[in-house]
Length: 259
Image (cartoon, rainbow, N blue to C red; front, side, top):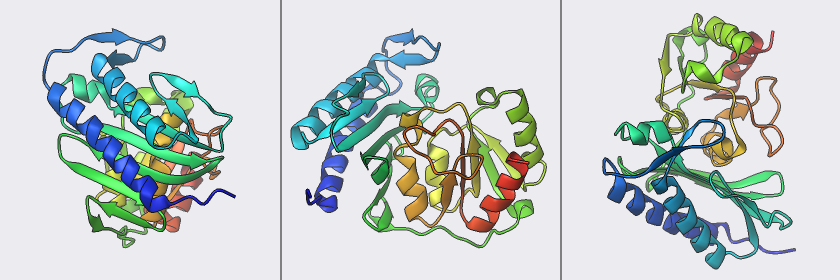
C-alpha cells in the first residue's frame, strides 16, 4: 500500500494556497471579467486563473491524485487519491469587494477526507486540518464546547435562497430556538465555527466542492458535520449540511431539521 506522508501533503497544499492567495490579492477590488454559468451563478476570470494555477501545481507535485474543481470539473478520478478545489467560495462577496471569500482545498482517499484547508486571502487567515490536528494559521486550535443548549447557540447560513420551501420552514423553526442567526459568510462560517465563534451552520443546495475541504476542519477541531438526517458527507451525499461544535447541539438541531 502507498505510504502517504500527510505532513508533506500539507506542505504542498499550503504552497498551492499561497499561489492562489497571491492571485486573489492582486485582483481584489480591481477590474476583471464576469460571466454567468449554466446555473446562473457568477464566475470571474480570477476564479479560473486560481483554479488553473493550483491544478497545474498540484498535478506536478502529486501526480498520483485526480482532481475535482468547481470551474474545470473532474479529471483522473480513476485514481486512489484526489484533490477537490473551490477557487473562490463566495464569488458574490469577491465581486462586491467583501473580504471574506475563501479558497477551499481538500484531499481525499476514496470516500475519506484526509486533509482540508480554508484560506481567506484578504484577511490572511488559514484553517489547516490534517493528520490529527487543526491549526489556525500556525496556532493549534480546539473548539470551545461550552454551548450545549440551542437557546445559547449562534447559528449561521449563507443565504435564504439556498433553501426550498420546506427546508426554509425547518430552518426558521431552528432559528427561533437559538440565541442569534446570521446570514452571509459562505465557507468563512465554518472557519469561525472551528475557532469557536459560531456554534451551528446549516445549509442546503450545496455541491461537493463546497464541503470537501470543510469536513476535516470541523471534525478535527472537535465538532460534528453531517447531512440533515445525520448521515456522513461523502462525494455522493453533500447537498445538505449541519455543522456544530458538539454532539449535544448536533442532536438538538437534527431533531428540528429532521422531525
